[in-house]
Length: 365
Image (cartoon, rainbow, N blue to C red):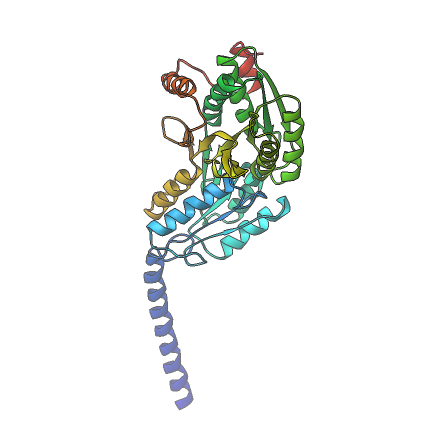
């Protein structure tokens, strides 16, 4: 009889403990976000494409945006603040995204359209996690898509190239031939031909965003053919274009050899010395404010305003696209033309094509 009473008393104690534990968990749940993080301990991370954070272009700009967000919000680099994983190959994208999911970040960025398929897969499997992809659209309720009007900025640097080429031969080097990079190429062509219909434009793709040697090889061939300005939209491959231009400049300092940078101000990449004298082969850069977009979305997410399922587009009007502030190699004539075209583009008077079809419809060959 005593044993039965003891057993009943123990059962009641355990039941009460279970009820109290359940109440405690309910209170804790109210303090947590949908992916398990304490709302006051906001964390953010990103997965790069194969270009890596030191590509001096797209990925680096995104990482600079995360670093700036971290600084503004008192966060430190690491799992409890802001971080990144650098992908060495396409096959790592899904694995790297899942790694960040397991580490419980409040928002996870995928940098580059090449990660779109992996984001779609992981977002489907992890509906409580929040993702953002740059340069592509993934239609999931827990994914925010960030895209840019690259053709607008490419048109503007094309205007500069068209006015400043002395050989009437300019080049374009892309990373991977894709719908996205075509926007750079086609916008550039339209800008060049708008101010210089006699210009000849040569375009070539390296097939990679991480092959600097291939970029250098293509650039060497272009410069040797008489091309004096190359616009590169090739990520890490574009570093080889700068190497080519600088080596040629060292051999012939008086020769006009120019590179147009992409995504961020690439003035630094064009700097060199010849016989103690400073030179710079960067003519200008088409700046795509990936850093601003990354910061903007992280801020909204921290405030509980994550735009899941939405596509956010940045162009001239949103100050997401522009030419670089480093303008010492750009003539006054070119700057005046750029300012005029900016207003025409904003007003809709000047169309900026993003496909070959649109280019032809505007009368360009």
